Structures are given as structure tokens and as C-alpha cells.
Length: 238
Image (cartoon, rainbow, N blue to C red):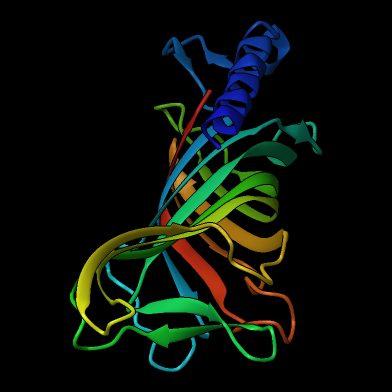
């Protein structure tokens, strides 16, 4: 997993250096000697939570996600206020809850609330996707600070690279005694390999509010139809 992440980040950085030498894509305000942000490299920090959760599942307030994307603007109008912007990046989320997954009798994936008599320090579901964001971007004229109001509608197509759960806490052993365990399970069945997420972004300058809503995590009729909602802040450079 770490090797995949490093390879993707190197590709993203290579794209950054490549576009930096393309003078036609860099716009500078001569009066203020300021470079305008074209929103090529995006860092997103979000709160991530499942909607349509199974009965009894409760998630934590500190659920979180980090996304890193590299996009390239293809301008549609001559004033460069409208652009189609395809990209590539990594999307990663950690969702903490009071429920653990298991394989039900009908071979579907289900979740059960952790026994109230058990104490645990950590119980999370971690997701990592290789994701291709595509946005239709709108921007205003630059103000005297060479900053713009921006709005974007998009879709994100993701391919699942890794999913696993982690649990650290009490568990009953074969003799029904309490023992402390630390478990990592990457064998979570019936997860959809492809994720489709409509998104919206609005902001000023290099700071934006962002939200996305993913299609169900599990295959139809093979698990709870939970949708991952992400809301947060993005920072754009170059």
C-alpha cells in the first residue's frame, strides 16, 4: 500500500514540475507581481461519515479523510472563466464506529454492534482509492489581490486500492474469558471496487469548501447500502 501511494505521489509531483515549465498556463498579475492560483494541486481535509447506516451503528465525531489531487484546466471560453478540469489522485478515509463487520448466512456483509460489556480503544474502517476527479469549474474576474470567487461541480471516479478494519480492545476467547486483542482484517467481502461520487466546491482564492457523496460501499443486495459523505476544506496551489 505504501509503495502504491509513493508511486502515485511521484506521478503527481512530476505533473507539477511539468506544468510549471509551461509558461502559457501560468498567469501573473504584473501590477502586484502575484501568481494566480490555477487550482492544479489540491489538498482536502474532510469529515467523513456513512449515511444509511445499519441499525444500531453509531460513528464518531473524529472520522476523517484526506484527499490529494492533481488537475489540469482545459478552458472552454476565451476569458478563461469556465474550464473542464480532469485529474488524478489519492482519496483516503477513516471511519470509526461502535460496530464490526461479519459475513452473514446468506454470504452478505453485515455489521453488529460491539457488546456493551466489551471495552475497546479503537474500531475503524479504513478506505483508500485511486481517484480521478473531473470538474466543471467557474470563476469570477480577479480582484485587486488577484484572487477569484470559484465554483465547481464534478464527479469522482475511484478504484478501491485498500480496505481494512482495525480493532483494539476486549474480546471473548474460546473459554468465554475476556482477552485484549489487536486485529487488522483486510478480508471484507462484497465491497464495490469502483466508487462514483458527485462533488461540489466553492471558495475564494486558494481556500474552498468541498463536499462529495459516494455511491453505496457494498454491492447491491450484498451488504448495507451505506453512502460515504465527505465535507471539509480544500487548499489549492499552482
